[in-house]
Image (cartoon, rainbow, N blue to C red; front, top):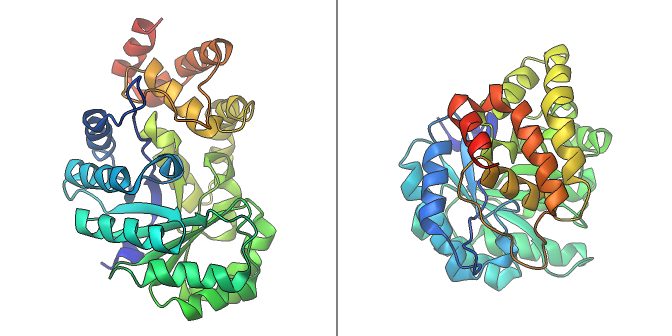
Length: 310
């Protein structure tokens, strides 16, 4: 099967673990990726947004991808994040290809509000740097109209996947309808957008919850692809919405809260790098209580770790 056909369901999105001194914890990363790769994700994303790509040097990003590829051990494709600017983005992409990645994920460049022609040049530079398929992540200020997406697809031959990070289902549906099957469409804003994403027809979504509860991520994708919205509503109300309510308390908690939850469960995560901030003690307490709710989706060993972490 082509990579495009394989990316169906849910992509796991590992965090990048750091030690207390904020250095890379590559052993922890390897353990996390190995644990995640035991579940049937369609791919894993190394050094993406949840993986704090913009806090990593190019050398560190290459190491994160290398370790992730080794730990995944061929069980599923590895998508590698890149960004910054055209030169650095292409350099990181080449490092990822050399490390064994299967696809490149291009986050928006450093310059907020860049002109559209400059964005095309940016994606073209990254897309032509390797022989790998390109995935564009439309998040934050990188907002596109249907015509803009079509132009990027025309100018960047390696562009294969479009990952939405805006959460505007109405607009995303128009983009998908306009551009059609030239691209494979993915949901990328968060697990809380799963019902809307699958309602408009994405073939996969990226999950940060995969770090703590792979079974929940897979259940969300299964219900979404089956358009079983009654089942989705149950999962969203019990697990997803309470977690995202905590994540919404402080900017950057989409990473910090996931790392704190992993630490509560005895997994390697560590702190976040500035300008992100770690969770407050109150928020950690709320996450600890929520992890008890998650116990049936995490399994008995994790439940024991929650108790041991108190």
